[in-house]
Length: 269
Length: 280
Image 1 (spheres, each protein chain N blue to C red):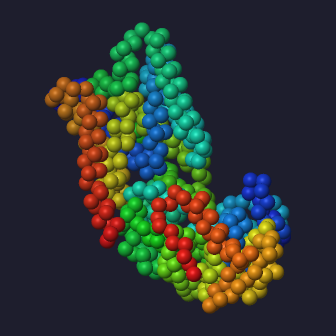
Image 2 (cartoon, each protein chain N blue to C red; image 1 turned 90 degrees about the vertical axis):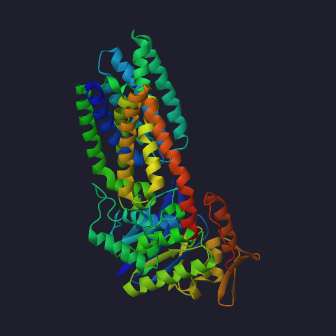
Image 3 (tube, helix red, strand yellow; image 1 turned 180 degrees about the vertical axis):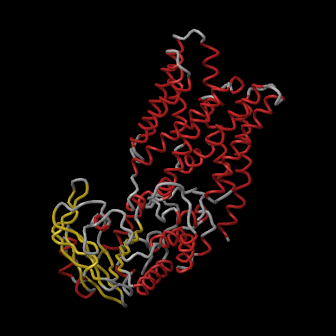
């Protein structure tokens, strides 16, 4: 199947997005902010359709809207009551705007499906270059704040006492999540970003307890699920995003079945 | 030179006055039991010493200078410990995250830092916790892990905010003895807040009793008297000594104890661990 250009492009694009999503998602799951990650995908939909409407590439609308929304969510703070409600209202509004923008765009159906569910087989070379550039920026930013982010995530009170700038670090992290969501949405679409951003890391965290082993395993799982998903789609002619989502869910539920036995043994021992 | 010196300090949180015009000095190497009812200002005082809040009036000196946020010479165990119940991170990574965790970059640990973590864990007999995920630890084990982290980095001053909460009596005694021994060996000054004096009575040098916006610092014999405590509780207090224990009673009710139960019901209701309230 690698003799086809579009297949090679699909593997390359999915590989870049999967590794970025896997690493960023590890911290998203650790911080219990998966809902915010989900919301960013929906908000990105409005950005993507808006960009298409004014003749820009959808990816830049996606990046612009999600990063702005990510910064706004970060500024709302960690403990604001009703924060999730506020995010929920905004994400519904964003989807509504996305629909409105599509309403004025003539090639309605194909464009909407591609944005919502992804279309990795249509990825071209220039998109891969964009994905690589975005991915590099995302990972560089994550590497820069990783140490205080981890401290803040595990022990917020102590981190504050030790001088970690809480608001800045958590806001920067949401901007990083927004970039990763934009990457991931190029592959599996805004509705299925969870398949790459949450599934693999939730699985990894159930299998290993080490920090680095968890991060690496989650990136490897995301990559494996993305690539096997594409291969599976090639063999079965099912949509790629479905295959990736299926593998992601399978991995998670298999690890859940595996974990409780070890967990109770450790608690007793 | 005093490690901590409060000079006519007034502290408030969110517009509510907590301490008013308090002066006291704590010398190097002292083990101070910090007591008082809920809301008396124990946590607020710690946060002021850490430089997280500024006094409305008066001055605080820590090691002879104004409190600095992120002072490496202070080991701190916060009271509100937000621990996600299913955190699948192992003990070593959890503690190591606090080692210079405020710096930018990747959370890579040098060999020296890893050895320091392991040495501290060993010193408090918690080495086996390094490889276990937090999710699989009991309340007592988590508490020991947090204590190990407060002791990391050779602090000169320890601020331990209610480290005995959610521990049964046996674990309480071992934590107090552990801190006492560790601090005495290294000449560390300790501020140890607790709900009941009896939890600390054999270990402490002096008592800092807060209440009613005021503070009393002195030996057990000086502070645990009816006139002093009546002023701090703003009520008629009777102090009863029995069998090496001291009970603070108001109309026959043990005020330290009832306060403790009250606190568990609210602040720690989400904590799933079994609490043992029978200290006597």
